[in-house]
Image (cartoon, rainbow, N blue to C red; front, side):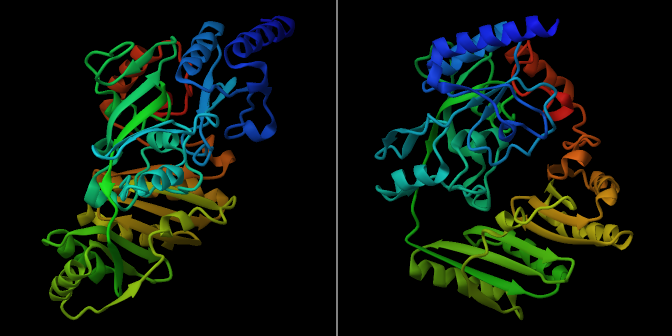
Amino acid sequence: MNSDASKAMVKDAALAFAAVVGQEHVRQATAEDSVDGVAVSTVIEPGTPTEIAQVLQAATGAGFSVLPRGAGTKLAWGAPPRRADVVLSLRRMTRVLEHAWADMTVAVDPGCTVAELQKAVAVHGQRLALDPLWPERATIGGILATNDSGSLRVRFGSLRDLVIGVTMALPDGTLAKSGGKVVKNVAGYDLPKLVIGSLGTLGVITETIFRLHPLPRVTRTVSFAGNVGSLCSLLLAVTNSHLSFTGLQLRTTSGSDSHLDVRFEGTSEGIEAQLTHLRSIAKDESFVEVDDVWSERERMFRDRCEKTLIVKVSTLPANFATLISLVQNTGKSSEMEWRLVAHASGTGWLRVDAAQSDLCAILESLRQGLQMMQSTAVVQHCPVVIKRNLDVWGPVGDALELMRTVKKQFDPSGTLNPGRFVGGI
């Protein structure tokens, strides 16, 4: 296609988008709208689920790729897009739609921030029991697309356990809903579980219904300091006990600074009983009461530079000691500093700062060791120049063909986030 024909197609598409959302909600993209250095031509801001569906239908018909975006806090996650024509911004869809406080459920727009949702449901002494990264800016759609839960997962489950319904717009313009009265029901699929963590490659979430939990009366966190091997053993002992903790976190660094944090929620009397039980498990290990340790994962993303690699590791808590030994041995072959935050749910975040030329080799070494533990490492940050030459997702085994089949079923034209997900999906 020559350049004149291409420009005409873009102009026609822009007119079609403007007819759906209004000219004031369509603009030319800037350099700040690019994703991993891939330029975008147009930014569209729909205001309703129907408008989202119509924009997707028009984009698919024109052969345009669409990159959904909330606040953009996690746009660096995933591989660089294969194509990037349109950014579909959800910044206008920010409402808490319905808080059925007696039923402890809430329905919310995809562009609503986590903090705003928590503020709305707290009026009735309730909360969404998760603590994702950057809650003041992160949107509901964004945390669902990236499956970002946090430390509370160990007690209340992941996002897949907290979501009881979603409505999503598919690339062909269909609005699909999980359960209840629907515009179209996608038979055979559990939509909430399918769409969570799919990085916006199957559809665009237009509404989510969550189950809620009561706000705790009292919250206290205690922290142990000591040898990382002893702390790993203590973590397993606490995990296998009858303690009702809502957070269990291991923090360690290349400087041998290691801590184990335990959080309890409930009544003052109940927490005192829990601490007494914890002392009996810890035996000779002593703890101190602390405050701001649950933002440690967020701190790992601060002051990132062209020498920084951050990976999300999924493994069994029983493997934490082996994981740390693997990281230490990897560091011996290069000049690198590292920090690790690991939750008892089996998820850890490792930050490595080293020479840019060493980052690929460091990642490969880590993945080889993790493969022996049947564990994975997904890149969540690295320099773009490095990112273009590595697989941020790593091997996924036999699941890839099934994932491609599902992608083809929902998005046969490859409209949504092409190339950003596992295996280039």
